[in-house]
Length: 100
Length: 193
Image (cartoon, rainbow over all chains, first blue to last red):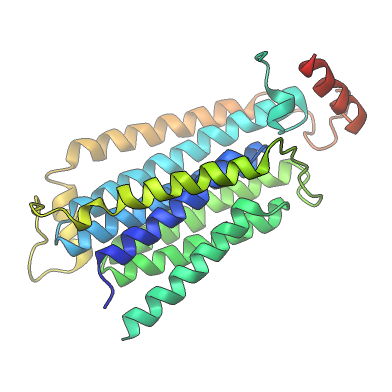
């Protein structure tokens, strides 16, 4: 039978996939995709814990995470367009301005 | 029985789809795989009995967020492969694997938790949407209102940020010198100096 453990381990695996994406991506748009994966993985963990302990707080936190993700995408894509206008590239090596 | 089959089917497909998203070179493939993965994640929510959350996931993530990404992708050239310079790819996978281990242990810590109690137990005899409404508009009313203000701020910020200097084309960059591959390399060379 599927218990909370299965869901938690799955969400850990998905979070790690997102983390590998964040570590290896150099394109800003792809970096955003990787952060979305991480947010979704955490949502699964919250919903699973909430369901198996009969508590609705898990679902509430998942709702607020979805709201935060939506606003993050709106602001992030605005900044992305500004960066593209300025540098004509989304490569992190090109748009980084700090030396080091 | 069906729950087990559904769980493993969904789990394998999400892992494969998100791996495509994290590793693919093509923006279009990555975005399509991400959208498909989001749809299947809503399947997990339905399996867990969180019907309302599943519907919100479908509407907000697959509907709104992916549409936003699709629009953003139209500004940039999405047909050619993304060139990424990886200085040390094996190190990334080593770090990622180590972090994966840590996160799996961390996320599965509630397995050994003994004294976990439901703070706001689900109300008996009502559907999931009704129970969610009862908790959301009593215990979580203030965060709900703050989230509404945050979404308004994000909307205004998105309009202001993206709407500036929209009178010239982003894709052709008519009145602005184009950065081609050679000058891109020059910029990189200058930076590494």
